[in-house]
Image 1 (cartoon, rainbow, N blue to C red):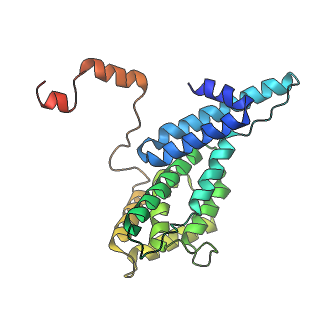
Image 2: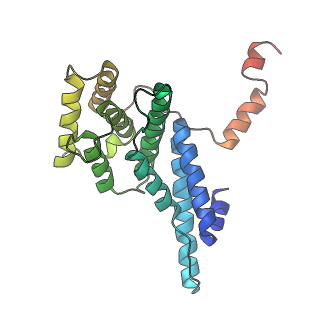
Image 3: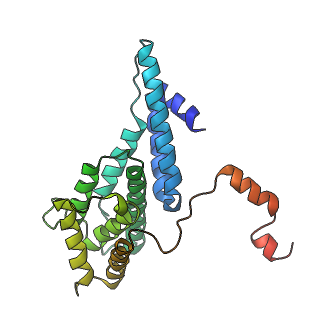
Length: 236
């Protein structure tokens, strides 16, 4: 499907925008599938690049925008977004939780895209600075929310960071200080301590990270157990 999506997107700007929007929304709503969506971004990007080179070689102009660029622009806006509902609103907790989930899904997508070398290190470093600095102009985002996003981002991409760079050393110092501060909420403190332990373990997770099954794998599993799940458990 990916190559066909890229071919259609390369010839129509509106299709390109719709495809990028769909991928972004699905990716942040399904953070457990972030690797799959990042792979799709890479496939579409590579296919678009190839088609663009072929069209230019034939003297044909191309007008479509890059799907990679459109998705990363959405990711950037999400990073700096704020839950605009007042804390005294009746549904504040529900809406704030939904916003936090979107921010974490966005962080995982960005980290996976970065792992595929579709995002420069300088941009990741700028994001990290934003998440830890108290003098940033976008400070209306609460510190716990920023630390949560930071932890999600580095859990996936921390192994690729150059921690000897001064800017990254400053980030890590902030993580150390926040993780041990008495004013830090227990949930955030434990999350950051897990991140510290992950780096100490050379960024190797204690449990293997499961990637989404490919269609062939899912079909094979179904053939072996077509009545899995509740049906199998109920004996029908």
